[in-house]
Image (cartoon, rainbow, N blue to C red):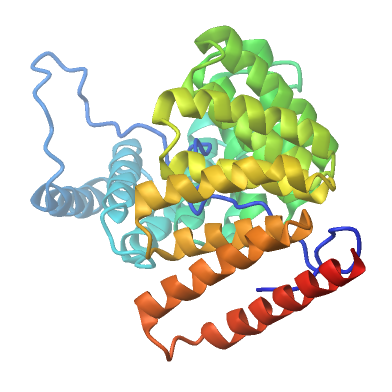
Length: 401
């Protein structure tokens, strides 16, 4: 935690910029199978259908009766089996995490439909493709992306669409296949499909539309996770420009994406660009949240870290102080986040060779640790050793003068 600098104010292990535990404005997660149930809601009475467990059981009984009466491959039986399977997929959303019972019941039903449809309708018929996509989606929802990929890929390929013909359905299916590849660990293939999805969405959808923006944001996150920082930066700038154009420079979404772009510049070690984005984001967040919120505290910290890593400790200190004040206000003096901010300020004083102030802040930290954990606090020996080193450094500086 406490390390003396090696030379010229450079820490031995520079502190990293803080990343929020829950990334803000993440792209939406892929939904469960999206094909609509054929519940005949268009019929004249248009009465609402309550998807109760009793209704689900009755649908299963209707399917069994229809199979006995009409045979397993009859058109009506295929429709009933399809609807029953997708109703089970809907119910799976209410299951505890990791419970795939409903999905495991739905998949064999869809596989049976696929067998009959492939034989009678052909592998590229629309109903066959819908069933393939449903099987892949169910496997993906069940946490089995490797099993999902072949079905989703076959469904997308079977659409027969050329790359320059885009429909919302084809784009959605391509995005779903990208999700499956990503979860299966094939990042490059996932990104390539997502790039195709974004390109098609640009052609098909209006600028600033929710679906287009969500897909661009997902691609940005994929680029960053894959370490493809130049692509992430270029797309991040585009997203920020979109936010400014449609919402204004001070809107929360604009500030969030300025902050996201700052992090990618920071990752790419373009510290001056990171500082510029951090500063713009902070201006907006101060107007939205005020200067004493936890939302602004970690952004003060990140801006300070960028200045420290660029060798500008004096410019970092005001933001380290602001981060500490904000956390004291938002979290209280005894919170771990507040103590971390105090440690950051001590490190900033040390790197700026302001040893008197580093000593005073370290003495305050010792007081805080004693108040929180008493004389047996496990961090006290390390902090006291660090304080002794600071005092020795101060004595050496004064002797040199």
